[in-house]
Image (cartoon, rainbow, N blue to C red; front, side, top):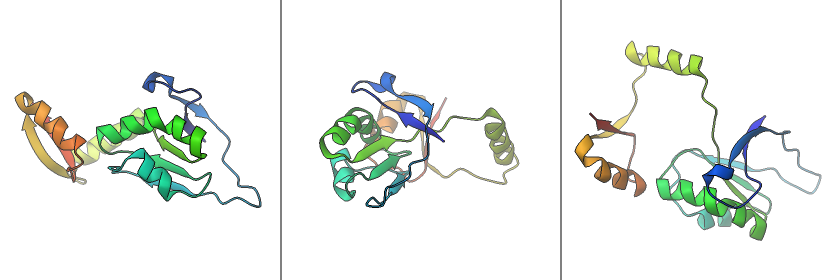
Length: 141
């Protein structure tokens, strides 16, 4: 399976996607994975919710939480043994084209929360980073 791997503390540049073996817990371990698509709590709050050696994957959410997971995640693992990570999925162009066609045919519709004109991009970013969004936030040009 592919996973986001960080082997050192630092900026998002240290993150890379690698092929890794699927985790198999020992007899005295429990494998718990949590995947969050709308993360809005702090890295420490997610780590507190985990069992020892637990893993929490953030797929999407507010900008501060995603950056916090990238920067503080490795440190949290070193200190607590609990893993808070950002899960990045490689994009497959054929899948993106298929989804684009379904959207064009109106067979699926994205959930749009708000639209902002380009001049209000700063406000749109603030809105998303505060964790208010309930769908896609669109910048119109």
